[in-house]
Amino acid sequence: MFRGLLKLAPVQGGVHPSANKARSSALHVSAAPIPPKLFLPLLQHAGAAAIPIVKVGERVLKGQLIALAPSELSAPVHASSSGTVVAITDVCAAHPSGFNAPAIVIETDGQDQWLPKAEASDAFQEDAMVLANRVAEAGIVGMGGAIFPAAVKLKQGAKHEIKTLLVNGSECEPYLSCDDRLMREKAEDIIEGARLIRHILKAFRVVIAIEDNKHEAIAAMKAAAEAYGMVEVEVVPTRYPMGSAKQLIQEITGREVPAGARSTSVGVLVHNVGTVYAIFQALTQGRPLISRIVTVAGGCVSRPKNIEALVGTPIEELFKACGGLTEEPARLLLGGPMMGIALTSTAVPIIKGATGVLALSKSEVQQDQASPCIRCASCVDVCPMGLMPLDMAALIKAENAEAAVDYGLADCILCGSCSYVCPSHLPLVQYFRYAKDKQAEKREAAKKLDLTVTMSLAKQKRLEQEKARKTAEKAAKRASKKRRPSRRRGSESAVLQEAPQEQKTAQETTQTAVEHKEQELIS
Image (cartoon, rainbow, N blue to C red; front, side):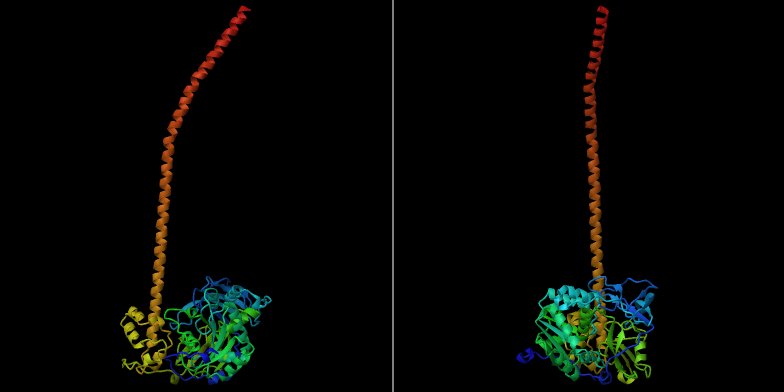
């Protein structure tokens, strides 16, 4: 309703890549078969890795907690199906380098037996923090790709005044249609989940933002929201990266999130539509996050579709469920083609934040060689953050990332719009990703150095206190020794004083005895 009353500032930049969503979005979501083995990484979220609490050889049930979150900025891991833990070892991780990461491996038994669930209560009658903690226990993270623990965001309601809960259903990445299908098939549940989050945050209004190319999803969500006045469905233009939180906030509220600030600074909190659905399941059914809808697409996939996969399912199993691959993919991606992660193996397991798996053919992948920058400034025109990508890339190439930070590197959202339009085919976003990783490493090293200095100072203080204590004890002993002779002299003088008395007593005794003897003689 506010969009009609306020003149909002237009969102700048952005591109219009081919959507390529038609084949997968036309079909209902299907369930993926239970794989023979599940590979559940301990780190599939932002923050610290989870800690295993099961042993090799132990039987586990579906939904059972198998790894604990060591801190608030983490998420626990649950068994996606019943079976036996056969290993806790390193597996191929969802990372461009293809490095290995620790995971719990479960050999499934095909029974898919659930852990007995507690009876769910009326969540709207519960305290906000109780509900947020239940979301944390369910291991829910941002399912739009951010993989940030959802409970941490929910608890922001206790620290900031959240006026608007923004549910992100824009899904601007090409090929991906998992959110589109979710909104079409689970509209009522998403609305209920949004109302629950509003209850937790005490937000004034709820806005569900959907791009204007998703007509059926818009109709379904509007129908489901009709009964609730505080829930609005807003249609936004189809333009990449409209799904970025800062762009969506500006489009819906007209407010720009300041550089270096979070969305809470303008009274808005954003949750992906998949995350909202997962929160609904956790708070009303007691279900942890053990599965998600994944778009399996790309020119090499026989039958692209959206499929509900258990977390930990190897990607190769999803390709099998879609009829297999027609040819060797030119590029394998986890996520969309603009911001997805390039993979080196189909053995990589599905993680909680995996929106899609793409097997792209040669015709779908840009194969042109990079050439020198021609200073056309196309990258500047499309940058949604108003940055100067060509200058930042030149600085990073010259190993001067600090100067690139001054040009706004921290505000870059790595959307890849600059790389998409670059006529010289420069891998601009790769430069920024590299520099950001280096900056993160530097911050981590600085943090460790600070911790080392703090611990060193604490040790030095502890040693000084110990030294002072020993010095004080020695001083006390010396003082004690000085006092002892005086006491001895006092004792000796007392003895000396007592001696005459004893002598006197002896003399009196002798005198008495003599007198008694004289009396006897007289008598």
